[in-house]
Image 1 (cartoon, rainbow, N blue to C red):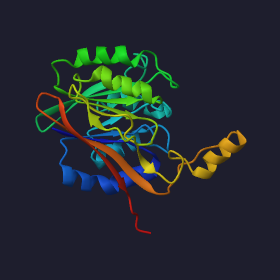
Image 2: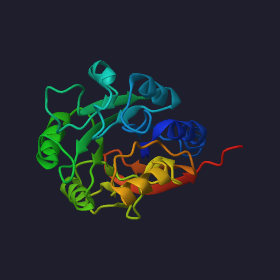
Image 3: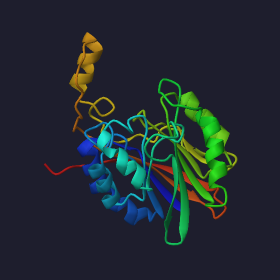
Amino acid sequence: MRLLFIGDVVGGIGRRALAALLPGLVDRHRPHFVVVNGENAAGGVGITERTARELFDLGADCITLGNHSYRHTEVYGYLDREERIVRPSNYPKGSPGRGATVVRREGMALGVVNLSGTVFVDAARSPFSEADAVLADLRGRTTHVLVDMHAEATSEKVAMGWHLDGRVTACLGTHTHVPTADARVLPGGTAYCTDVGMTGPRGGVIGVKRELALKRFLTMTNVRFDTSDEDPWLNAVLVEAADDGHATAVEQLLLPWHRAN
């Protein structure tokens, strides 16, 4: 099985970069499943039903979210209805949406789990005990499992990788929007990367227009952030796995989008 995981899609520029570059990736690598983190897909923060449907139309088999899952209240009902989109599993049980799902395609099944870190971001429960509970629930439903660990602290993400090694196909980090150079298959057979990066404008500050981010840092005043549109890239990870669910290879894909002016 080949899994293509796309890092945080940021705003309209990220969606356009995805539309331009994903078809070529699919043709070249022939992934069985495409999973996209879409928690910044709507205007650079959060997701709406319209933007989620756009990501599905572009080829996503499943969408993961993160700490901005609930930024747009209009999406709450959609999160309850659409089984192919997951928010952090360690959010309150009664909150909109679900934290894990199983997607199927061409006779194959992939479990997708979304977790939130607790260092510098909020969640209701420890992601570590939550991961154990979710994997117990998925047992017998699928052999291959991809975990999106959406967290701020690199230490928390690295620790999660070791916690899950040998029990999931891939544990891939999101949230910080900067790809880390540590993609590898851990000894137990889990593909790992601390942060996949973002699909969006590298010319800004983690997606924000750089002049606005600089103003905030320089003046400490309240600044409304807008999404940059400079130097868009697609950041992703390709995972290959055996029939037993263990990863055999992982490759980072960092692609610039050269737009026609």
